[in-house]
Image (cartoon, rainbow, N blue to C red; front, side, top):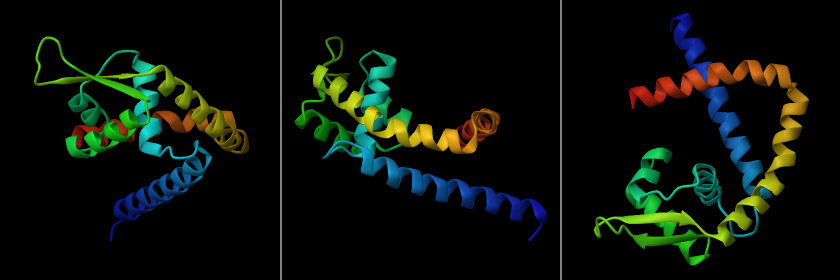
Length: 146
């Protein structure tokens, strides 16, 4: 195996392990019954501040429409989102975060913020800041190739 292959395997092994560990720690800090996928959708909807279609959300999260429909169904049952027909095209639906969803998102952020802050403090803000452009470029490269 050449040096680039070894380096690539080491890089992706570290990323995948860090992802697994981060997901595990963050999941434990979320409010009872909330999954990381639920928080991600609520956070996205709160951040964009606009309604989205299920297809737009599936594309944004790189998941199937079926997986997104499952997540949205659970969020709707919890009262965290509102799903309504698209007034211009009745075949489509529009998804918006509800006031309860905003409260749940805020509670989730309150639970995970100390964990994330601790990691940044331990690693050092300058080191984290310097790693972000590389990680962002890697993400964009992987998105372009998919």
